[in-house]
Structure formats: structure tokens, C-alpha cells
Length: 333
Image (cartoon, rainbow, N blue to C red; front, side, top):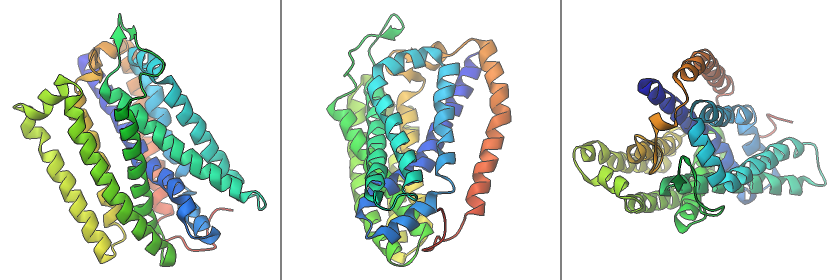
């Protein structure tokens, strides 16, 4: 059973990473939306994600549903602790989705749906970052139940991680627009990428330096042998992504900045894994303790073995079919 629990922990972690990597850039476009020069550029930006944005959210459903079914103890502890930011995130995602559809149908109130698209994206990003920060800083647990208050998630550290995620999503959105658009919009996206990139790397560095001092377990992971030999290549690789991004932006590359931004997020996720493992809810509940019975893990794994390849296949197919640049006048209406 421990092996099955670890397999499922990796699958859920992969689902969350794919959600952040894929939905992050369309949330980032929503964050940048008010700063785009005119309606024509906003139309192109929205059209660049129209074929894939709703499919990107599949991974959030898979991660949340998997947590409920496979790690019920973790779900039972995390939800009461983070109920407010999670609900805020879901409501914000609903606003963003509704705005995405209604914006194309309304002429007189388009400004309202533009504001809803921006607000939903910004609030969702902030709520996700706050949720992450609250989980990293630890959740109070007694007798296998949440033992804290309704606002324990609201701390300087969680707000800081929320700001970092907003900047990171804006970077993903800007580099996506560099890759998918041309002309004036691409030049504006390049300016956004410089600003969001500097902000993101500074905030990620600050969060990384802050995290080891939140709990002795984190400090031990990052500053004691033998784990240190696996942990310290991570910041070096983060510096490498920064170099690749700067080089790509200076040379006018289409793909390099976006791939560098995605690499940064993947490395941040690896860093979280180093800090957390083998904890499901720091600092009290391990992956094995939070897992469902063996029969449930096996049953769910069979279903995941069938569904995951299908989801991956249609995701890859969608991105392949809609590859290339998006031009004004083309796309979703």
C-alpha cells in the first residue's frame, strides 16, 4: 500500500503541475487584459487561448477529485482550513468563464465582461497563491482533524505567495502572447514579459529564502546532507531558466521565453516536493497516513490508467491543431 499511495501522490502532483502550467498562461492573459492597448489586441489575446482554456481546467478537476477519492483524510483537513480561499478561487474561475463567453455577444457592456475577465483571473491567481502559501506554512491538526481557525490561512507569507503567483501567471501570459501573436501585440507582450519576469524571479527568490525558516523540517531538507546534494541544483537551474529567458527576449525568440517560464514553474514545483516529501499536510500528516484503503487505490488507479492517456491525447491534439500565430480577425466569435 505505501507504494500505491506514493504513485497516487505523484499523479495528483502531476495534475496540479499541469493545471498550473496550462491554465496559468490564460489566467496570465486575463491579468494583463486591461493593459492591452485596444479591443483588437484584446480580441487576439483571447482568441489565442479560446481553443484550449476550458480543457486546461480539466487538470484542476482531476487533482481535486483525486484528492477527495484517494486521500480523504487530507481532503477532510485541507478543505476546512482553506475553505474561504478555495471557494473564492472557484467563484472567480466561474466569473472568468462566463466573461469569456459573454464578451463576444455584448457590445454595449463589453467593458463589464472585460472587467470580469480581468477580475476573475486576478482573484483566482491570488486565491491559488494564498492557498499554496497556507499549505506550505502548515495546517494545525489534532486527532486527525483541522484544529485551527477560519482565517489561519491569511498570513503575510500566504499573501506574499499570492503576489508571486500573480506575477508568475502574468509572465506565462506574456510569453504565451510572444509565442502566439505578432506585430504590436507581440511587442507589447515583450515589454510585459520583461517586467513580469523580473518581478517573478525576485518574488520566487524571496519565497524560497523564506520557506526554510517556516518549519525546522524545511530547513533540514535544504541545509543538511544528503538531501542538500539533490536540493541545491534547483536554484542553479532556476538561474539557468532566467538566462534562457533573457537571451530569448533579447533575440526576439518565440518559444524560448515561454519554455523558460514553464521551466521556472516546474522547478518551483520540484522545490516544493523536496520540502514536503513525504508529507501530504505539513507538518503532521504523511502521504501514507492520508491515503484511502488499498482497494480504493487500486480501483482508482485502473480508472486513471484509462482516462489519463485519453486526456493527455486530446490535450496534445488540441495544441497541435491550433498551433501557430493568431492574427486579427481570426478565431472565436
